[in-house]
Length: 152
Image (cartoon, rainbow, N blue to C red; front, side, top):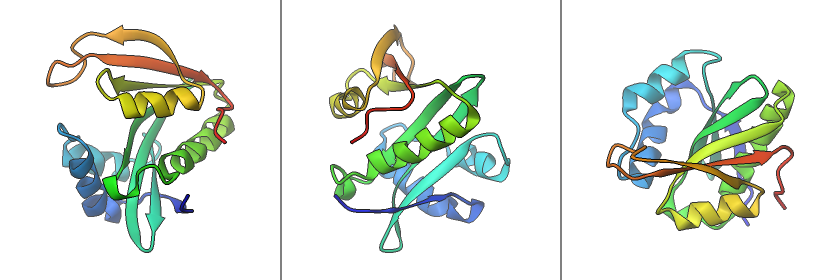
């Protein structure tokens, strides 16, 4: 396990965040979405995992009432399976609890077995399937977990 510095993202992180986004996803979020989010205080919370001066991964969290929404979690392939995603999720868990949230939810591609396995291990359970959720027509599985999570 590598211990990363988990930090809030700032607008000047946009180039590195977008590079991580493009490296991790076949259908990445548009750059302007990331930029707008980073410039609007309070809309979504962005955390980054920094190792040796490099953004190895990042995530995005929002909330509605007593539920937080993990909108995105991306870790560069060279840093996967080293605890980076867990560290980011722990950061979001703390923020969610500070907000008074009782649950966290997320969407994951039905074909993304590695992510599904990771989320299952930390306490997320299947809620329902959203047909044709992604731009390419793939279904999303909606997962939910009670807080605190089961991250070890």
